[in-house]
Amino acid sequence: MIDRRAFLAAAAAATAGTLAGCAKKSPAKSDGSGSAGKPITLGFSQVGSESGWRAANTQSVKDSAKAAGINLKFSDAQQKQENQISAIRSYIAQKVDVISFSPVVVTGWDTVLKEAKAAGIPVILTDRSVETSDPSLYVTLVGSDFESEGERAAHLLEKVLAGHTGTVKIAQLEGTTGAAPAIERAKGFAKIMKASHPDWKIIASQSGDFTRAGGKQVMAAFLQAHPDIEVLFAHNDDMAIGAIQSIQAAGKAPGKDIKIISCDGVHDGFVAMSKGQINAIVECNPLLGPQLMDTVKTVHAGKGSTLPRWIKTQESDYTADQAAAALPSRKY
Picture 1 (cartoon, one colour):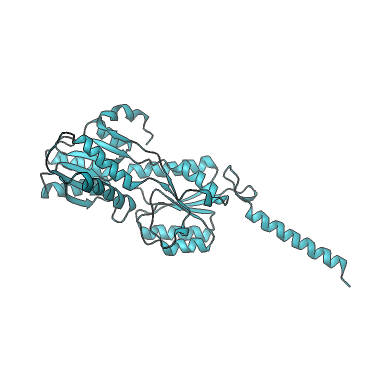
Picture 2: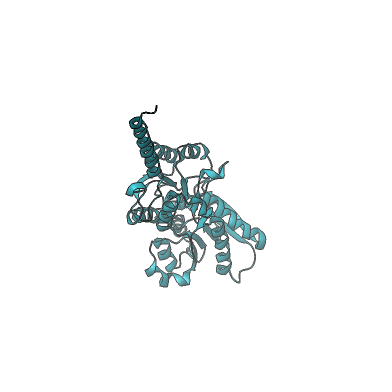
């Protein structure tokens, strides 16, 4: 005969277990809170602090997390992949709800991303892409189309060189070796050169590591080896600003003797452009924080499958004649 009291006790225990399980799986609330009103915890690994663009990007992430009520755990990888992998593993150990990072380089992420997947922690890329053997290792990318930026830079150069005939000797200051913006901006620029401008020649190309110091040092070496450089394509404003110093030290006028096309659109880049030292800038918007936090909420709510694989940012292009008018309204 069944003991009624034992049966009821067992049933109550089972019901409690079911309710507890449901509580753990309840989706995040739209205000940034997770299950039972607990804030979503986001582990974010930043690539570094190499430029004005990166500083604006970091501030946007921090401010947006606070505004969204998301608990942010932040780390600076100092442009070292090993630091970033260590930070991601730390977030896995801390059992954060979501991991996001801006990858230092494109390759070498499969192992740590598989660890995050095994732990049931979704990953969102921001700013830069990665190459993986398994597309399911991250949910989506929030960021710019760098190859398109390279193409846009070439089209801006077309405007700057309007009326010019003959060979154009170009120097290229590349970003960090192996980084997505460096690879893809160079690819996009070369694509337009090959298709439409066989008379454009890149006579020098080297990484300036996205820094002003790197841009200054590499440009000085370029000018020693190639004093006949006519155009500089810099993969970011900070390298362009560093290069301007070397161009002036060589007795040349930046923006006149050497035309300069750059990427990013940070405040100091616009100041240089308003002075005629940079001829045109391809904007790369660093203010990704609000989009990222919205994406974090969607992913934590279990709706990651509704998101596009790539959430692209909206950006513009600027020439020197637009710089002065645009400068007061720049937010970074």
